[in-house]
Structures are given as C-alpha cells and as structure tokens.
Image (cartoon, rainbow, N blue to C red; front, side):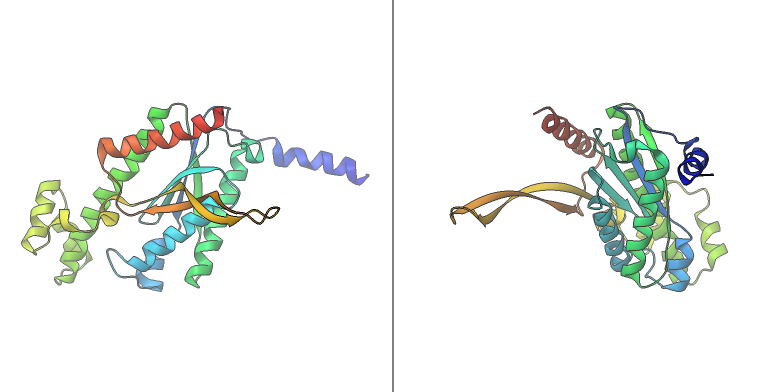
Length: 259
C-alpha cells in the first residue's frame, strides 16, 4: 500500500472522535496538579498550608501558559490549579478539544518541572460556556473555593502544629461551620481576615498595556511604543467587584475585536 493511502486510512482512527468547541462559545481550561499532595508534603516538603515558593512556581507556570501561543484573556491560580479564559475568537488547532487538553497539560507539566527540578504533571479539562454570566460564575466559583480551602487548610494545619495527628485534626473539624472554624483560629490568636489575600482568594494574571521608550529604525527619532505585559494581581477583589473584573476583561477584548 502506498504511503499516502496508508496515511489516509490510519488518520481516521486519530481524528474520528475529534470534538471541536462551537464558534462563539467561551472556553475555560482548568489544570490540576497530579498527586501534588504527595509532591508538596512528602517529596519537596513545602511549608504547610501556604508556601510562597510554591505560589511563585504556580504563577510562573501560569505565565508560561499565557505566552505559549494561545489567546488567553485572564488566568487564575489557587492551590495546585490554574484556570485560563481564552479569547472567544481563539481559533488555534481549529478549537479541537484534544489538542487544547494535551498541549496545555504538557506545557504546564514541563514548565513546572523545569522550575522545580523535580518531575510533576498536570491534567487539563475544558469548560465550554455559552454565556458571559457563566464565565463570571465559573471564576466566582473558583475564587470562593480558594477561600473555603484556605480556611479549612489553616484550621487543619493549626491543629497539626498543636500536636494533633491527621485523624484527630480531621475529626475536630468535622461538621464545623465557617464561623466555628473562624472561632477555632481565633483561639490560637489567628484572625482569618488578616492572612494575605493571595492565600484566601488566589492570584490573578491579566494583560496590561504600557508605554515603552523606543527609537524609530528609519528616522532615528525617539518615540513611544505601546506594549503589553502580564500583571500579577495578588490583591484580587471579592464578590461583585471580582465579577465586574471578569466582565470588563471580556468586554475589552470584544471591543478591540470589533475595531
């Protein structure tokens, strides 16, 4: 059989199950670290429950995902997860889901591993969201999940550092309400409201424009060039203000696309 005929025959088995995201649908990719509990607590021994070095590794990995060829409007990271909001006009790979999932998971795994100096891997899944409000709800969900996880983790590790073992600490927290967990921390002299915002709300990464001095290569004249860079936001707003941030980013991209 000629190669061209063989190639055509076998390609069907690779592409027959391809699913593509429909035009005008919003795409949000969520990446999660695989077995990161063991990696962070046993292999690398990061400080619990929060570690600035681990936070910075996640931020740097997120930056790499924003600059590896995709049109990412906004990225968010908390704990061992990353969420990427794509420009609705993104057409890379013909919007094939398997290409997004495999490429993003591979990129994140490679970048994090290189920076850590230790093998690590991520998985990836794409949420297809038909409306702006669902995009806002998605990021509100992850933002509030960060706060919930931060409270639980801080309570758990406070008890562990006080001498309780895994089973005792877990049992102590079972069934406690948010106010009761806050009261528990207060008994140890910890006010949850006073911990750094990145620990409670996660970290946002977005594009911003800035002016950069430059020289016209033809005339030699000094000019000002407009450039883009990633801004890392460690002080994300909450609730309605956070919703408005997400809406404004999408609105700005749609306005530029219409020009």
